[in-house]
Amino acid sequence: MSYLSVSTWSLHRLLGPLRWTAWDDKQKKHITKIEQQETVIDLLDLPAILKEKGFQAFELCHFHFPLTDALYLQRLKKACEDAEIRLYTLLLDYGDLSSTDKLRVEADVQLIREWIDIAATVGAERVRVIAGDAPADDQEALTRVSQHLNELAAYAHQQGVKIVTENFRTLSTTSENCLYIVNQSNGQVRLITDFGNMSGDEKYNELANTIPYSESIHAKPHYNAEGIPDEEEFRRCLDLLKQANYNGPIVLIYDGPGDMWEGIERAKVIVEDYL
Image (cartoon, rainbow, N blue to C red):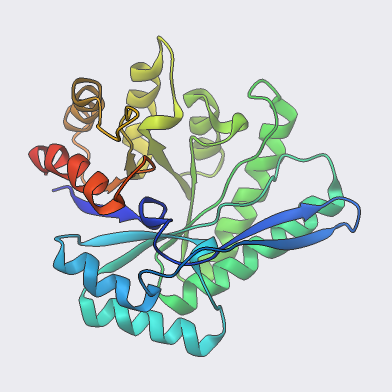
């Protein structure tokens, strides 16, 4: 049976400074760009708050970690255990394994390994790794990325962590490429399907192709300027989950204006019909 989850991106205006990872091409190294904002909710308090609001799991964006030392990670893991809520996926929001810059790819692979280590320590079950920014028709890039993901999946397996990728960024925006990655890994790399990351006439066919191979669904509706979801379109996406007998977390995504909890709730009341 499917169950409720939420991404911390849906609360990104409430969780304090955002620590974005970027590649500095001049220095040939990773840098962190900090976007300052008020901390309304301490991350250590979030698991209990989410459990109280009816969520059974959540996904945590890497830029929301204020610290990654062992002590802090153990405190966050205990907060999840105490709240009896699953930290289902650590969403690594940086990386381009499709790059032709070998130095950058080597650095990105090492960084991903470090986040796999963090996931293992904090108790996250999965790490979402971005495939890359190469064009969707770049078969050589797709082949390289698949090899890197397979190697990372083997490393993660040793740590008790799974690797997933998502229909996110250009290389993995087609279901054909997503399924190529899955098939090349013999199922060791699975998917996240995000409703909002596919568009056009083939959107629903594309979603239907990836959902059976997905361990997580990002339920992102179309929102209008007031943050109201397009319910008819949203339900058309959710109906695909029923058709595929999807059984896993439905992760609420809100990135619209106004109160973020209210935005989450508007999506939640629709999704509850599909649990």
